[in-house]
Length: 208
Ligand code: AP5
Ligand code: MG
Ligand code: ZN
Image 1 (tube, rainbow, N blue to C red):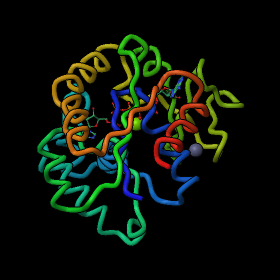
Image 2 (image 1 turned 30 degrees about the horizontal axis):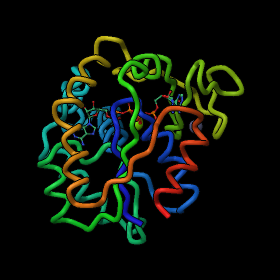
Image 3 (image 1 turned 45 degrees about the vertical axis):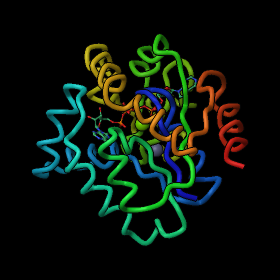
Image 4 (image 1 turned 135 degrees about the horizontal axis):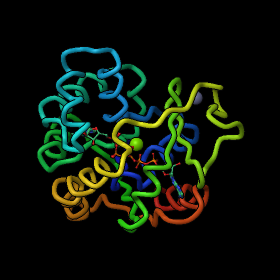
């Protein structure tokens, strides 16, 4: 099963990807997580990427394509994978077609008006990247990850100004991928509003 999750910032790609990992036993590949790891490690790539991420802009295509190409060669990808946050431009999608065949693309559709609250209230685990929300999906113990006990933090780009820029970037560069994959007959649409588990069940349904 080679899957792509499409959706605006805050649509729930990461949240649903983590549930799909458990269900299908295939890895989640998030370019955002890969880039944040590079920023944290202080590599040259991380330093470059950080400027774009802080501004809510896309990291250049060559950089993320290079990351994905390397990641997909790893052993754990041989039975499939879930791409979360890649591709994000038509150029990235075209390049991906040269690398591998995708089975399905799930578009998690949400109203733009709910995204700001979802993102400014998000908290992420430093250790395992699990996502929480102060109001919509709080951890059992404040500031601590339910799954691994790790410390929760707020992502540097989850502030109001950067979120607005990320949404603009999405509308300009990534939203056209919905049509791109629809024309290829690969698009599955899922309503991204409602309870997290209900959305997950709907994703499984469209993938059957
Ligand atoms: P990335 O990390 O991919 O961020 P994003 O696309 O902006 O998406 P998010 O991770 O913010 O949202 P999500 O859909 O995963 O939502 P989540 O499940 O966490 O990318 C970051 C940056 O890296 C980019 O801006 C760019 O600079 C760069 N980058 C990454 N990939 C790139 C690429 N391919 N090309 C170029 N640049 C790239 O949910 C959000 C919150 O809502 C959570 O708190 C969650 O608990 C809550 N929530 C989830 N579902 C529900 C629900 N149903 N009801 C209520 N709350 C919910
Ligand atoms: Mg995410
Ligand atoms: Zn954790």
